[in-house]
Image (cartoon, rainbow, N blue to C red; front, side, top):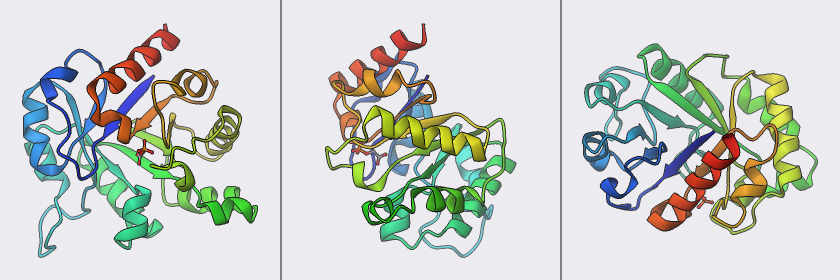
Amino acid sequence: MIVVGNWKMFRGPDPAALAGLGAIVCPPYVRLAECVDAGLVTYAQNVHWENEGAYTGEISPVMLRDLAVTGSLVGHSERRRYFGETDETVGLRARAALAAGLRVIACVGETIEERRGGRTEHVLRRQLSVLEPNDDLVLAYEPVWAIGTGHTATPETAQAAHAFIKSILDAPVIYGGSVNPDNAESLLSQPDVDGALVGGASLDVDSFTAICRTAARIRS
Ligand code: PGA
């Protein structure tokens, strides 16, 4: 069971308070070194595809490796929605990060319009088309309508999407979108839900700890 805390552009909790949880944390870049030093498995929230160059505001895979960062998210829906991330650039980021020895969590998921229009599977298939199976690749199913909204996917909806994703690309699939201590158990109990990508609830040590404990209980 893989539990990931995505702190987004928040300062986030004291890393020392998360020691021993066995979770992955994705802090803002400026706190990566602090989290690594605290012994946490630390991922960046994004990564560029070149090792260096004139790409203002970007961070490269080798720079993350130099910090002893373990991996990176790619393709989060907030990157796609606000910063022009495309399937093509998600593929470039994922390939370069994996080639550099980083692990990757690639995020996919449909908007509410796409779901209502019956296009969920089409969208997931398109988003997955830029990715290839890799031992260091994990997928995150994050329906955009469930992120930060409190409208979690039902366990059945998540399970169906996860099974569909695995039918296309053989990789662990974790669920993201309003996961909290109250809904974690029902989501994580689904056979094809291999973990959780937690945003808001990862900023609170007690909530995140509760989710990690639930995950550990379900796995054992
Ligand atoms: P949320 O965010 O848990 O606050 O919905 C999840 C994510 O964006 O990864």
